[in-house]
Structures are given as structure tokens and as C-alpha cells.
Image 1 (cartoon, rainbow, N blue to C red):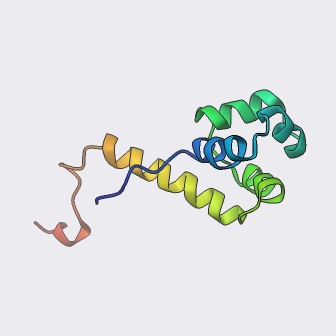
Image 2: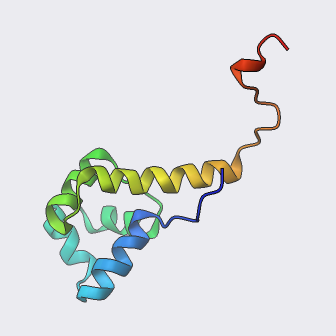
Length: 97
């Protein structure tokens, strides 16, 4: 499957919200009601967007929680496709072969 290289949601937040609006990560963390270190891990891509964080981001930054989760899923799928070896994985259609 050909996919483009989607950004981690944290990278998207950094570019679209923090850089464009000139707001600090700490100020967003406070509005999200999470520790600044938690939000920093999201921004750096070392923490994934959970359902709870998606709801928080939706409330503070906008977009739907589903869009935040979809962005995380796209990022994860892209990385999985580039990491997994499917050469020995077979379709159920080949079960008798």
C-alpha cells in the first residue's frame, strides 16, 4: 500500500498551532489540563494521541476527536507498513494452497 509520510499529530500541532499562533507548549498544556511534560512528549512524537487526549485537543485546539485519532492511526499505519515484513503472511484465500 502506498501512503504518503503522514506527520505525527505532535508535529502537526507544533507547525499549525504553536508556530502559527505563536503560543507556548506550556500554555497549551495548561489549557489541556495535562502536565507540560505530557504535552511535550506528544509534540516530540514519543507519546501517541489517546482517546482522552483527542477529546482534550478537540476542546482546546478544535477539530474533532476522531480527526486527532485518525491522524495518529495514519501515522502508526505508515510506520507499521514500513517496518513489518509481509513476505510470509498469506491471505485466507490461499488457505488450501
